[in-house]
Length: 246
Image (spheres, rainbow, N blue to C red):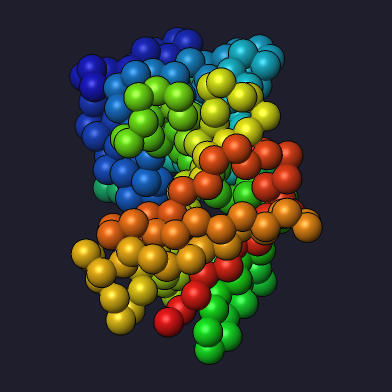
């Protein structure tokens, strides 16, 4: 990151940028490298100038709507640059919490999952919805990656859920990848993590993926990975994943 960041009428002192970056890294899991920070800066600059900033970078606008941590970091940067523009940038001991009143309150991922996950003694059922999928869209750094086990056909990560990282863990990880050869379809990976079984004894777990009357089944490999190809993207909000728990 350069020592100073240009603004419409001035520069943010490097010590303020350092404080901003420290706060930013605690509030979003996205790897905000120098290129992405420059992108945020251009977005702020256009907004401060009164330009149509959302149309300039609609993809970033969508990420800001979907990722509260990223929106919070953006609000901090906006406040810093606005203060420079107004010529009244102070130097408090810490970066204050931003005013996020402009953001629409939305349920957390944990709240949505509590509504969409059903556990019985024998199985776990995860029912997707439009609202839940909106919370599963990956940040820009993740979305730009590629499926490691593939030569390039499944390049863009559409949705991701690391169930093991939740406060109330789920015994699965879910990833959906766009199909470059069939734009209306995706590949889904379900990685199973059962409490009484571990690698290399995770093979043979039958995972079900249901969309309306359509039922697909896939057995896990030794690493606990089940793969579903040719899944219609349009039907993802209607999808149910059924995972046996024993």
